[in-house]
Amino acid sequence: MQKFIFVTGGVVSSVGKGICVASVGRMLKNRGFSVSLMKLDPYLNVDPGTMSPYQHGEVYVTDDGAETDLDLGHYERFTETRLTGLSSLTAGQIYKKVIDKERNGDYLGRTIQVVPHVTNEIKERVIQVANESKSDIVVVEVGGTVGDIEGLPFLEAIRQIPYLVGKDNCFFIHVTYLPFINTTGELKTKPTQHSVRELRSIGIQPDSIICRSEFEVSEKIKEKISMFCDVPLDAVTSLPTLDSVYEVPIILEKENLWKLISDNLSLNAKTGKSSNWTEIISKVNNSKKSLKVAIVGKYVELQDSYLSVKESLVHAGISNQSEIQIEWINSEEIKSTNVAQIFEGIKGIVVPGGFDKRGTQGMIETCKFARENNIPYLGLCLGMQIMVIEASRNLLGYQDANSSEFDESTRYPVIDLMPEQLKSLHKGASMRLGLYDCKLVDDTKSKAIYQSDIISERHRHRYEVNNKFVGELEKVGLLTSGINPESELVEIMEYINHSFMIGVQFHPEFLSTPLNPHPLFVQFVKSGLEEINIKANGKFINKSNILE
Ligand code: GLN
Figure 1 (cartoon, rainbow, N blue to C red):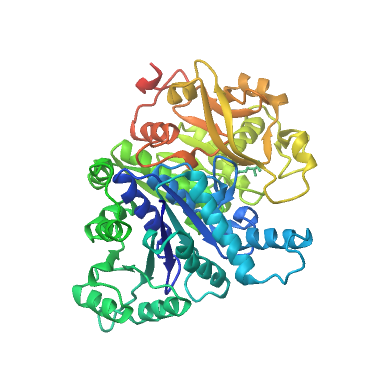
Figure 2: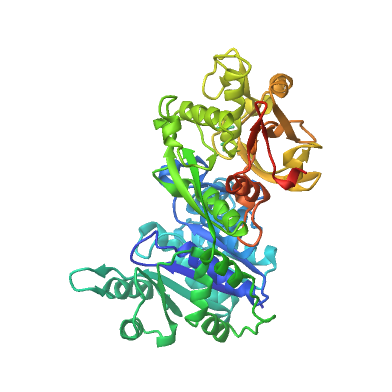
C-alpha cells in the first residue's frame, strides 16, 4: 500500500516549506524508499510559465517540458528523482479541466460545485501521481498558508484523501513560523496556535509541527505548542535557519521526524541509513577555498529568479571543495566605462536566462569583458545568445547584429525565430521546452567536460542561433561544440582561445544536484579556481588537465 505525507504551511509563506518537503523526501530516500513529490498551487494561472520572475521566482522545467513551481527544483535536487509536469498542479489547471468538462456536457446537467467537483479533480490528480510513479511514498505540498481563501479546496481535498487510501497511510505535517520578539527576547507561539486552530477547523489534525525560526526552539516552547496544538511533544520539531539548506534533512532526522513518520506509517527502513548526504554537508562546512562568482541578470533583486543557477554553483563548489561567494550584479548598471571596476576580483561570470531587451546591453559589455580578459564565463540560454551577439558585433563587425527578440528589423538577426515558432500565437507553454538531445563535437572543451557523445538537457526558449552565421563565427574562434542531431540547431558554443567561455542554449542548472553536480558548472568553478591562464603570443593557454 502506498503512503502519503501532506505538508501544509501556517503563519507566513517563504519560510522554506518546499525545503522541508524536499528534506522529508531525502530522509525517506536515505532509508531506501522510492518517493514522488508534488506541489499543489492554489493560484489561478495554469502554470507559472507566463508569470514575471518578480512575482514567482524561477520557472522550473521538468524533462517533459512542463513549466513548474520552483519547489519542484528543491524536490529533484534533494531526492534525485526526475519528476514530470504531473507533480505541479495549480488551481488554474483544475478549474480549466472542470469548465472544459462542463462545456462538453460531461456532468450530465448537474450543478458544478467546488465540493465535490473541484475537490474530486484534486484528489484524482494526487492518486494519479501515486499510480503513475508507483513510488512507496508520495509527499504532497500545499502552497500558500492556511487561511488563504483560494487554498480551501486544496485543504478540503487532502482532508478527504485518507478516506480513499486509509487513515493509517496518511501523515500530516504543518510547517509554521515562530517570530522572535527582540524586546522580550523570545520566540512567540501564538501565530502557530492560531494557524493550527484554523487547520483543525477545516478538519485536519497535524501529526507533526515543524517550527521554523531564527533560533533553536526550547523544550519549554515545544511543550507549549504540544499542549495548545494537541500534538505529542516529540512531534514538535525545531528547525532554525541554517547555513546550508542541505543540512535540513539531517536536522529533521535528529529532531526525531524519521522515527515519528515511520512509526505512524508503519514503515520499516529498506536499507541502512546512507551516509552520502552527511558527507556532502561535511564538505560544505569544510571547504578550503573560496571563489567569487558574479551572476549578471536583470532580476537580481529577487535572487529566487535564478535559484537553480545559484544552487548549481553551490554544488560545483562542494565538488571543488570551495565556498562560492556570489555577487549579484544588475546588468542594467553595467557600461563600457564601469565594467572593469564592477568585475574587479571576480573569478567567474554567469549570464543566466532571461527575456526581453531590458538589460541586454550590459550583458553584452559583460561578455566582451570576459572574452578579452579571459575570465571564465558560462552563458545559460540568453547568456549564450549574448555571446553570439557580442561576437557578431565586435569580432565580425556587424554593428547592429542582434536577436530578433530585441530588434525585429536588425540586418543581422544572428539569433532568430525558427519557422515553427512563428506559428504559435499562445504565450503559454509554446516555447521549445523540456529535454532535447545534443551531439557533442569532437575535440572541443564541451566534449571533454561531458565525456560523452550525446547528452540530453532541458530547454526553455523561443529563439535560436541563426545557422547562417555559424561559419563566420567559427572563423573568429566561436565554435559550435554541440548540435541537436535532428534539427541541427546549435546547442553549445565555446571560444577556442579562452580558459572557459561556454554558452549553452539549454538550462544545465535544472539537472545539477548536490550528489551529482553538473559537469559544466564543476569545470566552470574549477577554471575560476585555477589561476592557470598564461598569455603567450596573444593566446591564452589553458593548463587545465581536462584538455590534455
Ligand atoms: N529570450 C530568449 C529566448 O526565448 C532566451 C530564453 C532563456 O534565456 N530562457 O530564446
